[in-house]
Image 1 (tube, rainbow, N blue to C red):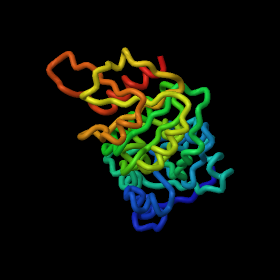
Image 2 (cartoon, helix red, strand yellow):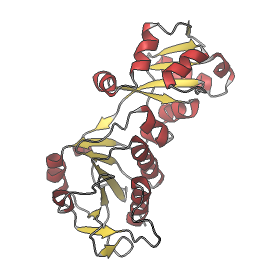
Image 3 (cartoon, rainbow, N blue to C red):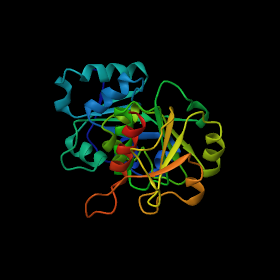
Length: 263
């Protein structure tokens, strides 16, 4: 393995990687952190090579480590062996993963989200919780969705919390961003259906018609879809509450809608 060794928390590279916990730094650099050798390999297998590969001494003997190192070096990235303390600071965990990768972000343009073999695209309006967002990306990957579109002011899908929740699917699902107006203009050319969720809807999710490819449009955790966003939908539906709870977690509700739309 070809790598250099860093043991100081004050090292400039370590500082830059730690700074990627801040959205401002991620926005300015276009980079993000993915923790764990499994996630790093997932990135490599889907065509995303690390710019920086940090690993602890214990990771060297792992059978997949050489693949990660070779892919990083081939892409002219940097391989660095670091201490446990550095890994803990970089990941902000007492028991950090033994491998951390720094990758380029990979947003796509709305014009690249086209009706194709995928049966569903997910659009999220002003989603706020990174755990919800990451879980939705993972679910979209599991169901074979074509993309996840972030509409309006959303949390960052490349935050450490969101990336963790994707379990590697951050590399597999195309991510697009749009303002409300940009999404409305793009939606006008969509050839399939657009289905939203509203508490006031009279049609249940299981009775709706999902003309393929379907866009599942989900609203903010607290307020749901605004009237303007709901008006973009061909049909708005509700998921029946059969117990005492009056609502579902956004990621759970989105999962139900995704599988209804891809059935």
